[in-house]
Length: 358
Length: 253
Picture 1: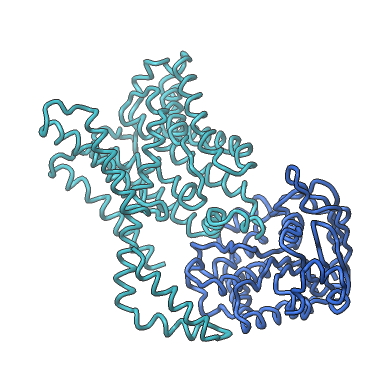
Picture 2: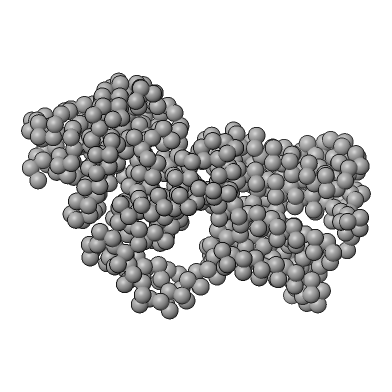
């Protein structure tokens, strides 16, 4: 517990130190900071859903867009308070995810990926057609968020707002994955057969994780709408869903810090390639940027299959187990319980294998 | 004593009939050995009983309640637990957490209250004590904080048994729990099975090690090509010429 609190303290310190760095260090801008925070919130729900329960969703943008459109429509058309609109957007996304989950999770396999792609495509088509969503023009004039009667306008102020939201969201997801719900999700991801045989209603747990992911994405979409004050169908784009998966894959799916770390890396990559590639070659436009970004991604996934955070964790374990190798087999022998020497040898072997794992 | 009743059970996969009209009644508890040559349909029977498969035809009742066709997790919560022939531990959880999963699942089955229990960890202390008790029973308590996936094979088998017992089953299905174990480990585990059975749990034991099955079972059922070949007391079954023929002399080992 103390280690966890320490983790959050360090995380908060880093989050709140970023404005001091990004306003001084080239080529970062505070707009990158806001983007990182929003993208991290949007991707955060994929940690329990994909990282723990092993379910791939390509529909995060559908829920992100739902939040963005709910905010935009309810504030511009109906004059609602942005906060209330955000709440409604989150409820809509959560309700939608729940309903979809009722059907998808009854069957096993990767239907979720397909169904969520379809959901995003359908919503994008609908948003392009309807008058209330502004067709392909989108919705301009979305109001800023107000906090204690003051509009949050500048990027620095908005960063503090979104960073605080990210901190809270990370705390919520952290509590979920550490609870017995998170343990059960891990069980489902590790062996669905054994989880069911242990009495776990697999579909229900996947649904809970899916709803959580949808709600967080909707809040992120809403935060985005009130930041840029203009939204269009790009908030529903499949590429955005893919980007969110990339964020957790790069950052690390089995740790709550993965979303923040991943979004820092992804947004930085975009920023750096935009900044420096044109300097290398005059012809290098947006296309080369995507290539550079893709190459970096492949390298991370090749060499750090558990993401950057997972890579750190492995390194830490390796350092610790080299420091304590002498103790491990001894405790294992004592631990063999019924106590055959054979079992103890096996454990010792397994222990050393773990230590040597790359 | 738990009454298990299997009636005219049929399980077909496309053109292959894995279980062919199996009927079996048992209401006296103890360990039932289920043996038969490879492909006889033993694991399929366990898969149907535990709800991993929905039978093509026939019924299964547990203490008079029909369980065939129910979802696997419902069957589990009605008191049927199992282990797996191919290890299915929750590899990324710790040993203790593996046992906590069924404990929490059985406590959290009710929709709203369940979610609250899950998030609050209200029963955490009681569950932990119970988990440690079960781990002590299989000799894994000292490894409780190890990652299950890092345990050697034999210990993962024991962990599956502890996990299965966590649901306080009425019917325990064991799919080759002794495979790959040393003689000493086998003896430990079979002693545990007898102990569990003496507490009123009906144990259905599928096992290749026929000698162990004959030693530990009160009743032995032999399947061949999905149908009942022999059924009775261990000694009688071992002496049955049809069984000896099906096993081509394996019983002499």
